[in-house]
Image 1: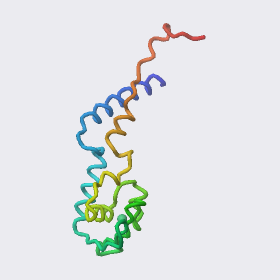
Image 2: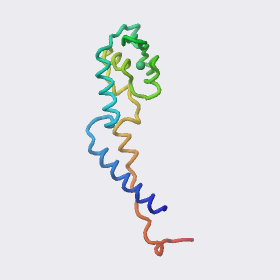
Image 3: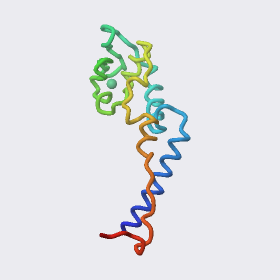
Image 4: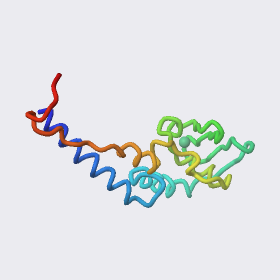
Length: 132
Ligand SMILES: [Zn+2]
């Protein structure tokens, strides 16, 4: 059973590392798709700036109060996901700031690549093990 798990992890690490190396976006494919989807909706929203970091984003429903310096929104998705919500994307676009600065490091391709940078080698035949 342990050998099965080791082999599965070896395949998993290789597959994920290879996929991360081929990724050309700065965010992981999953995060990129989520941001694209949120960005599509956010283009319909309007912004009422309060100051240079606080924005009231009107979405036609509950609206969102975004603070870009604290990376928070009243809808709470921004602080929970560590990715900009629709309101935050609207505010970021209005403030003309790069949205990547507001994405958590765990969603960046460099972190993904680093997470799977280790190699998992076979342990060899039990007759070759050095057991004290
Ligand atoms: Zn929000």
